Length: 569
Image (cartoon, rainbow, N blue to C red; front, side, top):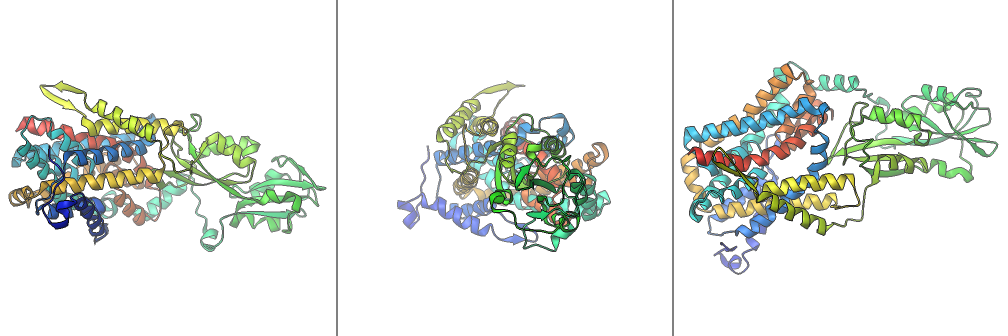
C-alpha cells in the first residue's frame, strides 16, 4: 500500500505539506474567471495537483479514502432532508429530469468508450467532468479496485479519471451555464425576465415597489397609533385596507389590554400597535389615527424579535405557505408573526403563497412574544447555535455507510456494489433525514458540514491529481482533443433532452424548467446565472427539487460506469 511521499526538498521530510499546497494554490487558481464562469476550487486543485504530480509526489489510498468518506457522508447528510421530502407525487414531473440526466450521461459515456476505446477510468472521468459531479471521481476510483486489476493498472486508470475530468469539467460548466441562461430561453421562445415576473405574480408574488425606495430602512416595522379615524370599525376591516398582511397585534383601552381579534370594534381613544411591512404600515396614519409613543408599561408590544426555526413537524412538511398562512390566520396566537426568509440547502427560496415547506428548511420568523415563540413551536425546533458536532453520530453514520458499501450483488454476470463512497452517501442521506426530523439527535452545524464537504473533497481531489503523476501525459497525448468535444455532448445532450421533455410533455413553466435543468446538472453556478438573467429567484423552485435527486443519482453512476465499461471492453 502506497504512502504519502514526495522527493522534492522540504516535502520529502514533510510529504503531507504537498497536499495542502495543492489545495491552497488550487483554490487560488479556482478564483479565475472564464467569461461568466469561475473555474472553481475543485477544478483548480486538480490542475495544480496534476502539475505537482509530475515531480513524483504520491498520495496514499488511506488519505484519499478518509477525505472522500467525510465529503460524501456530509454531502448526503446535507441533502437527506430535501431528497426524501421530494419523493412525493407533487414532485413527480420534476423527478423525471434527473433520471433523464443519469440515463443519458451513462449512455453517452459508454458509447464514447466503445467508439474510442476508452478504459473504465477515462469513461468515468468523462462523465464526472462533463456532468460537473466531482463525487463520481471518488465512487469510480474506488470501484476500480474491485475489478481484480493489478496495482499498476489501477493507478493508470485513476490517472485517466483525473485527466479526463480536468479536460471536460470546464467544458461542461461553461456549456451548461451558457445553454440554460442564454440559449434555452430562445429555444423556448420566452423573455426569461418577463416570464419570471409573470410566473411570480401568477404564484402569488406581489412586487413591493415602495420598499425599493427605502433600502436602508427596516422592511418590517411596529408602530403605535391613537384611534380616531378608525372609531367604530372592526379590526379585520382596517387590516384589509392596510393590506400587505399588516395586523393590529395589541389594543390598549383605558390602560388595559383587550383581545386584538379581527372581530373587535375599535373605539376612539384606543391605542393600537400596528405591525407590518413599512410601506403598508405607514397607511395607518390616515386609516387609524396619529402615531404616538406606546405607554412604557406595554413597551414589549413593539419589541420585535427574530427566530430561526428548522422545520421538523409532520403536519408542516409538504404544506404551502398559503396553507400555513390560512392555518395561522385561524389561530389568533400566530397573528403578527411574519416569515421573512426560507432557506433550503443554503439557498434562499422566493416567499410565495405556492412555495412548499419541507423537512430541514430553515425558516426565519419575526414578531413579538409570546406569539413568536408559539408560532416557532408549531413549525419545528429553534436552530441550534452551539456549534457542537455530534462526532459519535457522525462516526457511527460513516461506519454504517462502509458496511452498506461492502454489500454486492451480481446482475447479468456483472458484480455491482455501491462501494464505500456510495454506502457513505446512502448513510448520510438517512442520517440527515433523522437529524432534520429530530434536531436533538445527530446535530452537525451547517458550517461544519460545509468544511467537511469542501476540505474533504479538496484533499481527495489533490491526492487523485498527485497520484496521477506522469501517467496523465499518456492520456493527454492520446485523447486530449477528443475528450473536450465528447464532454460537450455529455453536458448538453441531457440538457437538450430535458428541455424538450420538460416543455412539451411535462408542461413545466419556462423559468422553473431552466432552474430544474441547472439542478439536474448539480450546478450552483448555472442556477446563479439563470437567476441573474431572470432577475428573480423563481427558478430556484425548480432547481431545489432536481438538485436533491441528482445529487444522489449521479454519484452512483461511478461504480456503474466502471463495471459496465470494464465488462464491455
